[in-house]
Each structure stands twice: as structure tokens, then as C-alpha cells.
Length: 629
Image (cartoon, rainbow, N blue to C red; front, side, top):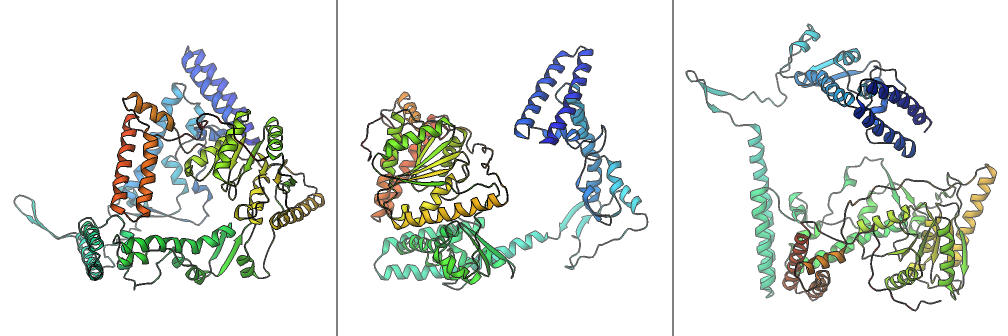
């Protein structure tokens, strides 16, 4: 930041001189334009540490004299480096051309007050400057230019013999007309022929499996499944023969890679070196997911195979099982604030604690309060944090409780929103971003306020019904949830409970142990704790319209129904039909849903609409609810 402040001083000096230059020649418009542009850039640099087009101030930032060349990668190469210029007949002219083109463009910008003259010093190297870096140089080209030949002097080496033994294409030319009569086919055509042979071999293996599977279905009287499988597979085979690819081609990966039935798939782990180090972050959640991915994939694809949507070989396109994954494990680091029993057992005595933070922050203070009056106490605590411009997270046990609590808090004037699994991933990011920006102060959630959330502005985490023992109130969940307040110097977690469960006791013991160790370390090394600071990321979505607005648009266009409600009902019917194994009926519902969404998009001018996370979400008419207190 000190470097930017020094740069800002020299930029202002140049700006003053340039404005005086423009005004002395009566170019007031250019002077005003340059002043507005540069003052805005300076403000952004000092506030944010960056601005649009900051590279145009590189001379000031790097404290170079006017007219000096910029620093490049060539400045950092060793003394005895070898420079290889491929396709030199085209590359060499481009070096000088880049410099000339850049100077021509920026000269216009400087002349009309869009940039300071120092912007001209942010440029590619000129050809003469580039030549100063040339020491040992190899110019590689099938058609070298005269300059490369001259520079190389007598050291020109011809490489016309290919390792493959191939020769240049031979053409037969009609001598009178100078017309090419015949040309030996290109190597690419031979490659394409080889690929076609591979695809033909592949489709042969798939057809053999298809024939066996159709006979299996027909032998059991499952004619619908046999017909369905035949139509689907024949279409895929036709696409592979004609286009070289088909939708869902990964389901034929066993045939493509010529693996035996039941064999594991190839993964990235097959290509790692022998002595690689594996780091598993948030291992308490990641380790169970490894086996879960395999089991979930098998459960889904078994149904597809059973009802004729896929060949049995599709089961071999799957994640690794847990046992297969373990075969690849060598040196492994499990990183977690709450490691599971398996990681601790595998690590044996090599468990390392990292509880001291570079910022000196200690774990949030934990307080247990009774269930009676928990909502009133929560409201009081939230208002204290809002007055200090801090944020609050509240965790409940059910989605319904989260929604009702959100309505209740909004009724009494607290700026609040809720977060749960029905909100898509992009919108969750938008809601968390809005919380950090201060668009609202309190966020109510269920199980989404745990691992991976970095919210430095949150100083209070309130856990309602903390004594309801279970997955959401286990010791691991309590520790992870409380950690959301560990980025703030005033971090605190409040557990509302009447019973001290084993999970609460374990959580309090871990919290007290860590706080004591952190405080002692800070005192020993004279460290003053400070809050984590991190800029708010840019929005992932630039513009979303509200879902409620979509229904109003349809009504204005003459519709007399709520499109979003109709889509929701059709989705429920589609899921119900799929659960009843009525797949053709479910497909009809799916097509109707897609048609309604397309009509909704066209009414909006071709832009699909969905609820905006950056704006207040409407939940209909506010209602008073009975909340346990």
C-alpha cells in the first residue's frame, strides 16, 4: 500500500503537468476528461489496491524513469539461457509489430486525454530492446527469413529427414497447364481411417452385449425393457459411427478402454507419481463421501440397467469404491477441525494439532442458555450485534422452523433471510455475499452453516435446541457450526439447551482446551488478536429477475394461471411417476415442464427468470407463528 501511495503522488504530479499542457492549448475537454479518469483511478487504487487499467501506471508503481523499457520475463532468466524461437519467419516480424501497434493505439489515447503520457511506457519491447537479450538463440522455421539467416551466419542447420521416415507429399503436375493432377493423401486421412476402425471394433463389442441383454429380457417376458434398450443403444451406436461421439458416451467407457467386466475405472490417481502426497481437506466429511459416491452411483445405475435404459456395462463407469481408493493411498494428510475416528486410527500416533492462528484469534466464547425465552434472548443478542455492524448466524433443526423464525424476526423489524437446501448453489453464494455486504444482518439456516463458510463479519452464532441429540447437534456439528464465528475478534456462540448432552459436553471441553492453549500462546509471544479481513467477492450473477414477477408477466400477457405454481405441481407429479417406475409418464411431465419454462422465458424477452438472492425474498403475507420460547 505504501508503494501505491508513492505512485499516487507521482501520478498526481504528472496529471497536474498534463492538465496545464492541455489548458495552455485550449483543449479544455481533454483536460476535464483526463482529470476525471485519473482521479477515479487514484481513488480506486488507494481504496481497493487496484483499478481498471492499472497496468497503464506501471512506470509509477515500479518507479522507472520516463521512456524506460518495462520489465519482462527476460529480465529474470539466467545468464546462460538458451532462447528458441519457433516459426521464426512469422515470430520475428511480430516482435517489432507488437511494439509499433501498441504505441500507435496509445498515442491516440494520450493525445485525446484518455490516458497520461506515462501509459506509453507500458508497452511490449521494441525490436532493438529485444535484441539486447539475445545471446544463444535458435531460430526454428521451415522457411527462415533473410534476417534469421544473416544473424545465424554460417551456423544454418537443415533438418529435412523425419524420424517417422515420411516424405513430403508428391504431386503430379500437368506440364503445360501447371495443374495438379494427383496428390498423395494426407496423413490426417490415414489417422481418421484408423479411428474409424477403432470405432467399428468398439461398436461390435457393444452390439454383442446388446444382443445378450435383449435375449435376457425377452427370456423373462420383459418386452418393453428389451425394446427400450434396443432403441436407445442403436441410436447411440449410429451417433458414434457418424459423429464419433454420442450423448452419455461415458456409459460405454468399459468397451472404449477394453477393460474386463467388473474392473475398476481409470482415474487421475493412476497418473500420479509413486511418491505423491495426498491431502484430504475436511476429512471428517470427505472420507465418508468416497464410499458414498460409489454406493449412490451403483444404486442409481442399477435401476437404469434393470429397466432397460442402459447396458450392464454402464455399471463399470463409476467412482472408485472405498477399498479401491485405499489401494492408492500412500502418504496422506487428513486435515479437519473435527477428525473422525477412522482418520485418527489410520494416523496412529502422528496426529498434529494446529489450533494457533496467525491472526492471534481464539475460539469463540461458548455460552449455554436455557430453552425458555430463547427467542427473546436471541432477538436481544442480535440487536446488540446489529448496532455494532456485525452479522449473526442462527441454526435451527428443520426447514419449516427456519422459515417461520425468519417471518417472525422480520415482523419485529430485524433484517433477516434464511438459507436451506432448496435454494440452488449459485443463489446460496449470492445470499452469503449479501450478508457480508450488509444487505441484511441475520441469516437463519439448518445444515448449510457449517464447513467451508468464511464469513469474517459474523460475530455471533446462535444454536437453537442444542440439546436435541442427533446428526445436526452432534459434537462434530457443534464444533463446525461454532467455528463460523472464529474469524471475528468478538466471536461468540450461544447454545440454547436445558440438558447437557454428551455432544455439548464434548464441544465445551474442546472449546475450553483450545481457548486456553491459544490465549497462553498469545501471552507468551505478545500477540494481539485481530479479526480476519477479506474483500467481498464479485457477484456470480449479474442480473436475475424475481420469480413472482414472472407470474405477473404471464398474467399481463393474458394468462390466468400461476406458471411457477403449475411448474411446481408438475415436478411433484414427475417425481411421483418416477418413484412408481412409470418412466414414460414421468418423461411426459418433464416435457411439459420444459415447455412451460420456455414459454416463461419467451415472455421475459428470452431471459430465464429465477429468484434473486441479492434482493429481499418475499414469503407472502407475514404471519404470526408460535415459536418455542
